Picture (spheres, rainbow, N blue to C red):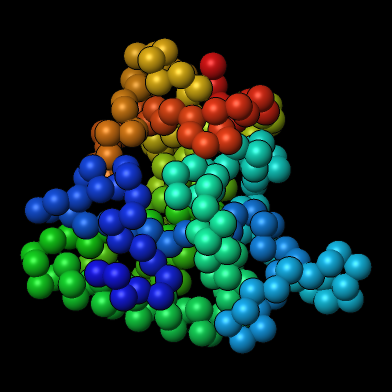
Length: 253
């Protein structure tokens, strides 16, 4: 299972809790928001440009369009777990740069990975599960439509994404934040109007309430199989990495 170019299998502490005889999860990790700004690839070599370089502005990228509004950039999950390692960060930047600069190559590699992963699961009679936004918030509908036998899922702060006509093999959980009053109100509105669950990051896992926003709270860290969650709930996650010290309103006390 290790011969994938873009996706990872079995390297996330939470997804492996749900993996077993029924499900196997693969995740795509990209450098979130604008963290790949200023980077280019020279062959296989990753190069960081000085902001005075004439090519710098051409490297603009933002894979999390609501990051500033929702206040999640400082406490991003990107820094949690294996994300503290420079090699991991460089790999995520490299993939984001590839998506930006050579999208045909990126999607060829991604589809090859998904084909391989799907065949691996089919041979073992296991449901393949894929989260394409491990540390990003991009619309992957064009890919999802090509793989009806894979169960896809995501967390997203792009609340109006729930309005789209998604295929049945895609599950979306909206992500809550109080960093911005307008965002807070909108994400709750869309979650209520479109019967979508809300993920909420709490600072202390020992002080997670039984209800929040008038919804029952479930433990979202028991596993990552969000498509199995009951409807109308808050999915409680506890702060990890830099999020433990977040004061923006993204993490709830």
